Image 1 (cartoon, one colour):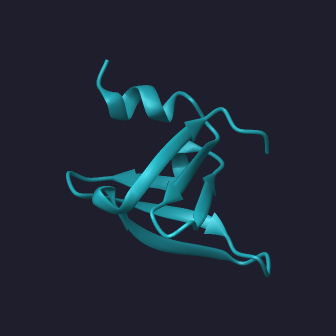
Image 2 (cartoon, rainbow, N blue to C red):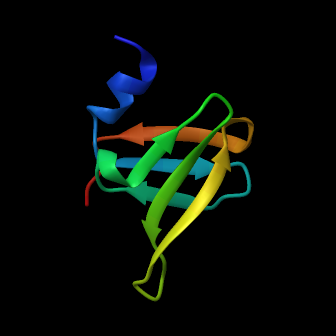
Image 3 (cartoon, rainbow, N blue to C red):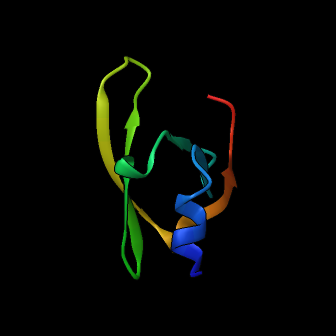
Length: 68
């Protein structure tokens, strides 16, 4: 099993960035992975669904099975 398949089986995820921001991905439908980055759908503070590109090199950590 590759790391992407393992990560997608461990939903929801919290991705923490080097600048301190974090994004919770509720399901595998909310993330697309490439060789250099992830495109993530997340709920902003105002409740709107937004998308953002997150380069792997700027990620500080990924937590799996986080509380919703």
